[in-house]
Amino acid sequence: MSAALQETPAQAAPGLVRRRKVYYVSGFDPRGAAFYHRLYREESAKQAVHHGGSVAVGSRSRLGEHVSAWNVDSEWDGHPVSTEYQFLHWDDLVRRHWEPSLPRLVWSTLASYARYIGCGAFGRLSKTFRGPFFSALYPLVYLALLLMLSLGIGIGASAALSAVGVPGWLAVAGGMAAGAVLFGGGVALANRLAVFWLLRIYRFVQAWGEREPEDVRQRIEAFADWIRRDLEASPCDEALVVGHSVGSIVGVSLAARLADALMPAQRRGLTLVTLGQCIPLLSLMPSATAFRRDLQCLSAEREMQWLDMNARADSLCFSQANPLDISGIPGAASGRPTAQVVRPFRMFGKQEYARMKRSKQRLHFQYLMASALPNEYDYFRMTAGPRRIQPF
Image (cartoon, rainbow, N blue to C red):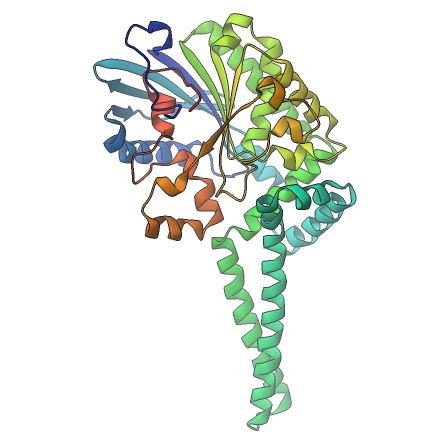
């Protein structure tokens, strides 16, 4: 059974939840709380047909400078649950680090790849993690093929026009126009295929590995202080820190600070959940010493639970290796984190799943979305259900 579906006897009252807080950290995504609020509302309604509970998502409000929230009121066989779902804003920082110029993005990312290769992290990636390695190569291969194809079409069109008697300068102009049209169409398709989104992620994480961004560090500290004060002001039965994609990296550093800031009893009620994590993209860099200290802190933490949920089919995440062990920190031997395999191929029919797999970005977001078929993984029962999160 899944974290979301596992049941315990009715007399196991300590496992029941009436009040929950979810502190959600998005990935490297410039979209803010409005997008994720709409996503949660729409997808929770779709998922309700599978889990049998009723889930009502309230309106979005601003709780603080860096926090938006909405209430999720649900009922499960007569058991009411109130969840306060808090969106921790760092989307403004993402937009600050989001290179808008495609030529500058490609050029600076090439430099980032060179440094990532030079420090040895890319070599370790290629030998151990084929999915993330090929996903890292994918944007470069796509753009190289697009450039060669556009040049080839341009030269071919120019030669064809010359062969039918078109004047030289006009033939060259026609060839350039044909190449430009193809290149423009390829760039538009690249946006749909998340090519530039991936380039921006690798550029940002590589820069973080060389030097932790000061604005991100300060925001993580502000998140930790907010959560500490929020839990003291309004205790709950369960609190979840959920980090998705690059948000898992932010979530690790946030959880490490909470391990120092919270009392043991508070930490026992808190669980770090990493979804589709790409932690090794940062931790494999020799210069990312501050981040590895955060991982070391979580390795030694015994009160706070850590669940790492990933799908093998998701080539943008590290699903088959312990993020602590990869980073040179003993983790598996101490059971940190608890690994959970998400199986999206069981969530959909074969044809629908085949269509989904064509988009790396779509599959990477499935952790936050409804399934077409009942499945052991249910994000909405996990975040709004009647029982505390547990391993599958």
